[in-house]
Length: 94
Image (cartoon, rainbow, N blue to C red; front, top):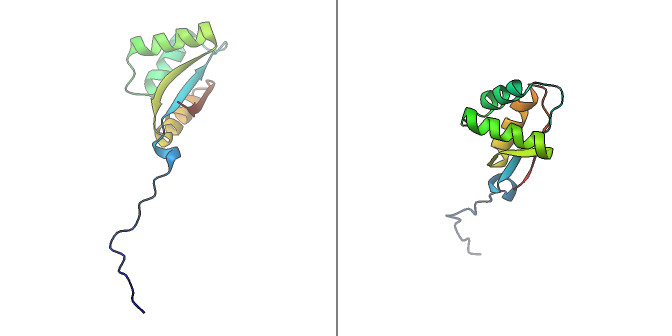
């Protein structure tokens, strides 16, 4: 019997991990606009004050707004951070 050496193992990458996900902010009727903007900037450090303000205003007007699109693991981290401020947030495939 001949054994074929396995020099390369197939790399399995989960499609869910590399597929982009959107972090969605839901409209908030409880907190002030300033609070929401501050929470977004603290939760997603790459957001500028202007971007956070635009996201907050869109969520206020349309009921929801995309905060950021990124891989699943990072999206889960941002969702969890935003939730610590008591804001409504979810993630979904982009």
